[in-house]
Image (cartoon, rainbow, N blue to C red):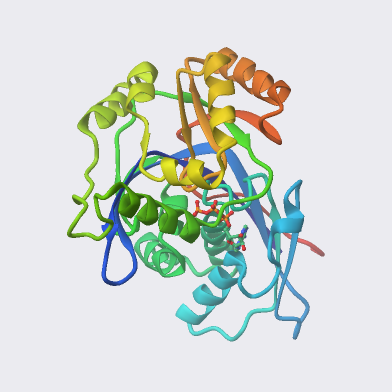
Length: 315
Ligand code: ATP
């Protein structure tokens, strides 16, 4: 028996970053948006005694760790432990389309997909609230990959509130060569704040909040208004670590994108287009520009991790 789950990548249409807390985290006001660019994770029963085995396919497959640290494997283990099951004999395959270490929460997406796939494979029927709790244990971006759509994340991003959206938005993602480490980008954000003299602790920086104009643009399905409200407090840090991203942002804007920003901690750049035709033209122009490794036109919002199908092998 095998179960395949499709899971979306995310872009943060707003990423407000508060000051550094004593526990090492930052308070975030994070508006997550799920896009149709996604991974597929297949879970299947393994031979007895083999434990969890992982395989990965796709252009970035070499960059995906296939050890115990992979979020899909950790998710399977966590779900089994939650239900008091023994170490599972499980084959997990990740068909990877989300850029690795690209600021689109690809690893978190695979963790969410593995939770849903194993829950179906093992016929556990875990309530969604429990899956969300397990997801939050795996990482602060994992619950959103379960939920999908558009949501406001608070705290470290794990406290989620679904938001209303009045239409489909068209996006282009420009994939850079190599990734950026999310902790390194947060450290650079703190360093830039210190350098600017504003201070970087949570007593220096106001607690971020969702932008009402951005929420209204989403609710009305107004792409031009959303384009004007896109905001990412990590963008200066990502640009400081990877100055060439400014060329990518410029290339997409010159090609007709109505909004442009670094996706999360980067280095993937996200562009909002006025419609699907414009998105296709922006993607083509970005490919020709030589400022990125690949460019994908896509859309959203889309649902979170969902079962695509189950297959029974051997009768
Ligand atoms: P985020 O936007 O949540 O900060 P990201 O999109 O920048 O994350 P990921 O693709 O999630 O980055 O990968 C970050 C690191 O997580 C990788 O460098 C890799 O070592 C590790 N990782 C663990 N599991 C996976 C997975 N299934 N796919 C990709 N990376 C994984």
